[in-house]
Image 1 (cartoon, rainbow, N blue to C red):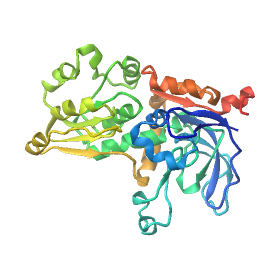
Image 2 (tube, rainbow, N blue to C red):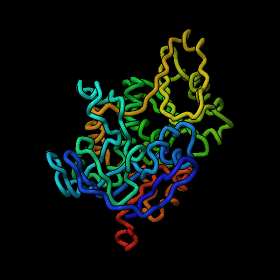
Image 3 (cartoon, rainbow, N blue to C red):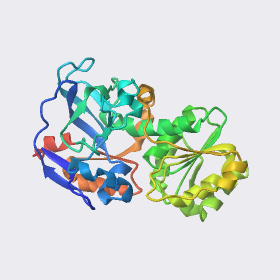
Image 4 (cartoon, rainbow, N blue to C red):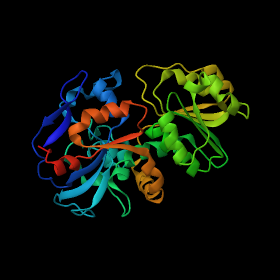
Length: 355
């Protein structure tokens, strides 16, 4: 079968012929991939940015960690999952033997491996997944929406870490897939105002408008961050600011836009250290928190949200392409005209191109 792989350290990916997935061992399932999203992580791996050099010992590896698919085979001892069932998956696999896992605290596993990062992922027709990582998807949720369970869990966690509560004013920096999800969960949490800001992000702002957001700022049109935020800061600084850009230049103005006792949440992956004004942090009783992987216990709530808001979430999937056009999918994901680009391997099978 065809698979999109990182073969060696350095820039670039390769669409390769690989052996079919082996039969599932006890506790495993084989998932026939229906949709896999192109993520910022995938772009960083392609570019081989410094924060992803940790992958080198795992190469070569098939990418793809945001996915959904239909179970094709189940291994011995698997319960609660059936062939033909649509699932998504938590991409972080735990070892089961470290002290944290033995103590029943898998979120603290010290030797976890990521599907699509340290073990083969879903940019292929099939992927092998631990059964405990599979999340059943309810009827009525399409496969492309289901493939966003992982990024939505990241967005949900950012809002939880920020402690967003009813009546808060929230600033979201970055209107991409994660930022859009953050805006949705902040609104769900009861925020009085959700402002989403970006730079040269007209197409993504249109997606946010279709999802019902009106407080949108494009710094490319306002002459910069300070001018763009000025009308909102005239009403007061924000209770919570959530950064989802990975751009170092936004951190200082983000902190200046933060209220006394406010919380700044960092979700972007930054390739180098970023300065923080510690004097302002102390005198304003501000908090800076990092947010990354969602706890396992939060996933069912994310799936419930996905089911309840399915029609809204469909706006976020802006492009769908077959696996044979994976390079094009990555180019689209770098283009700010796209929000979520989804690769659908079965489209190649229909065309007889699966290989």
